[in-house]
Image (cartoon, rainbow, N blue to C red; front, top):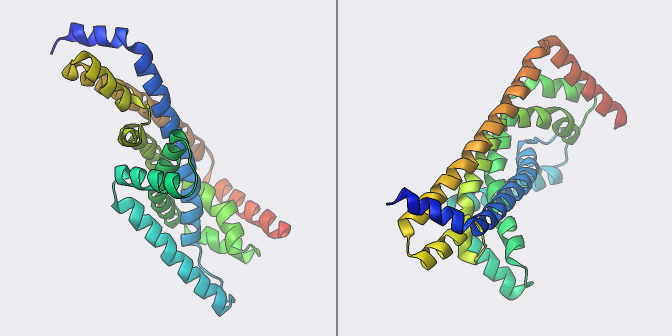
Length: 255
C-alpha cells in the first residue's frame, strides 16, 4: 500500500468523500435523535406500573402493550440492520408509498436505534432511587406525570454515556445502508475504489475518515458528559432532592 496514493485519492476525490460524510452524519444524527425519542416513549411505557386502583381493563391493556413493545425490541435487536433496511424499504416502496431513499434510511436507523434506546432508558429509570417516585406519587402525581417530570430527566442523564455510544455506533453502522443505494461514505468509497482499482488505499482513507468522525464525536460527548457530571456534583444532594420534590409538587398542582 502506498501512502502517497492514499493522499492522492483523498485529494482527487475529496468532493465525493465530503458528500458521503455529509450523508453519513445526517443519517446517524437524525437516526439517533429519533431513536432516542422512540426509546423514551417505549422505555417509559415499559417502566410505568399501573396504579393499584387501576381497573382490570387498564391492567390488561398495559400487559398487552408490554408484550407488543417487547416483540418490537427483540425483533429489531435480534436481526441485522441490513436485512431490516432491505425488507422495510422495498416492502413500503412496493406496497404503500414510493418514498425516497434518504427518508427510508433515517426511518430504518431510527426504529433500529429506538429498540436499543428503549432498553437503555429502562435501565436508566431502574437506577433512580424509588423514593423519588414515591414522593412524587404521594403529592398526587399520576404515573405518567411522575415519569415525564421526575424520572425521565434523571434517567437520560444517567444513561447519557450509553446514548452517546449509540451515536458512535450509528456513524459506523450507517455503512450497511448502502444496500439501498444511500450515498453515504461507504457507498462513495465503493464507487471510488471501482473507478481507481485502488481498493486498499481507498478503504484505508475511508477507515481514517470513520476514525476521525467517531473520535471527534467521542471527544464532544465526553466533554458534554463532564459538564453534566460537574453540574450534578456542584449541587448539594439535599438541593437535588428538594428540586425533585418541588417539581413533583408543581406537577401535582397542575393536575
